Image (cartoon, rainbow, N blue to C red; front, side):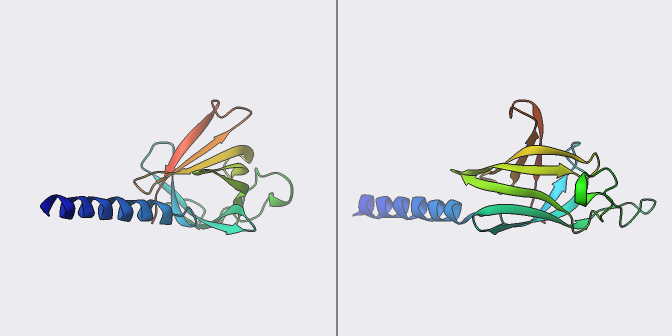
Length: 146
């Protein structure tokens, strides 16, 4: 009887763990972290619409000597000279198994657009990879929930 009870408890734990990982979702607010791995840059809100994922800057972390509502003066096209706060910086992402892919990300500081991949980690952080051409040639950041 004891072994049956232990097996049931083990099965319950596996089921609860599986449900938790299935319930994880990339939508919501994320704190972007600079390439140094510690400096908070902004909060981006990821939303899903019609099977595609989009991300908009909703908050900036700025020092007292920095412009508090900077414009994206390096951005291309319609985004040029628009406020970074409120700017859509991720668009067109589609779900690809356990990750999101086939979309784009904009670096508001440089104005450059990159292909993008997003992957939710088991610890609840989000790996964000921007690249040109091949994913091998790019850079990654780890974003955290606020």
